[in-house]
Image (tube, rainbow over all chains, first blue to last red; front, side, top):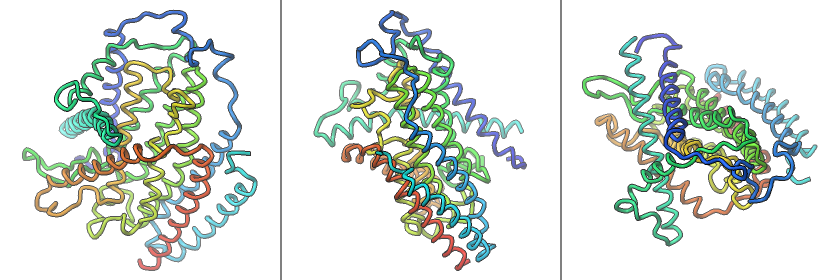
Amino acid sequence: MPDGILLEYVPILTLILVGLGIGGVALIAPQLLAPKRPSRRKQLPYESGMIPIGPAQRRFPVKFYLIALLFILFDIEIIFFYPWALQVRSLKTLALVEMGLFVLILLIGYIYAWRKGAFEWER
Amino acid sequence: MAPFLVEAAIKSLILVLLLLTGFAYLTLAERKLIADFQARIGPNRAGPYGLLQPLADAVKLFFKEDFIPEYADRVLFVLAPLITLIPTLLIFAVIPFGPELTLFGYRTRLQLTDVHVGVLYIVAVTSISVYGITLAGWASNNKYALLGGIRASAQMISYELAMGLAIVSVVLTTGTLQVSGIVEAQRNGWLIFLQPVAAVIFFITGLAEIKRAPFDLVEAEQELTAGYLTEYSSMKFALFFMSEYVKMIGFGALMTTFFLGGYLGPFVDLYPGLGVVYFTLKVGFLIFVLIWLRATLPRIRYDQLMSLGWKVLLPLSLANVMGTAVVVALTA
């Protein structure tokens, strides 16, 4: 294998291409093989056989946005754990103290969110 | 450069073909096993023991009308299956299926590529397929699909946190982000014995990530018809179905690599080919457990899902990471 740190990503590109090939065949083949008989009723969105009531892309509960916000906060913090996890062996106590402070701040936010009821689904 | 590219292309092709076959027979295995659990016979018409059933299913799906609803966002509706499938395939790029061995006089690793930050790559790639499912739900312009898609994304991002932290414990214990390094670090003992808490958290969050029972709220038939799949038909449906089952294999492969010693086993140094056998057996066992769980456990409620993820698994995995760090720092 040739040297170079970016070259190790080349096989991933070939895998993406093969995946696109399989996906492309799967998307195109039915266009050639399968029948096409559209009708007015068939084109309607499925709603258990009823005629759909109102638009489908409606507003959805704000709880989902809250989950997404919390996820972004925590996920960014978890990314910081990865480089740290590799250095714990060499930095020892320093790494522990640093991460201890970081997790402390994280925990304050976590407890605040918990007390505010951010993790309660039924309210 | 040319032989390197050819090797990469051949390996990618073999990998995808293996996954396609694995997916096809996994659907049959699941139907057969669920039938056994419920004292039924299961598919047995197409070929001996129903062995040709996956082929029959594929042919049928190819000849079904490929239907796009009138009000759907056509571009996203067509792209969503690909956005779900390709990241799922990409997980396997860094998984070592066996040790280094000589094949037809050519020394090679049974791994597509050994990225130096392989673990980070896995975490990144597994997150992308959330987009495909959310977009599928949105683009269908159907209420069931939208709700299913949003539920799926909320469930997957909630459990990704605890899963990320469980993987941090693995990285802490082995001291490397390279996937082959994690497997080699388990020569003296599988990580499931060193990191039992992380292993359990990884298993539970993995179930939620691949939306398997008891976390299959996304496709809760009684409430959401088929969730984000409601408007999909023909091969677009098959692509989603395929990524679901490839994800099952991917989950088994990741759990095996991180916690069950990957391809390691007795005599693997003498006969490197045995590594593939051990790897397949371990993954097969895990997939059997997944199917077993589906036949056993009822689905949990959505509020239970959220409180389990945020109130139990997240603090538990954080505590596990900090505990591991203290042990690692003091014994290093």
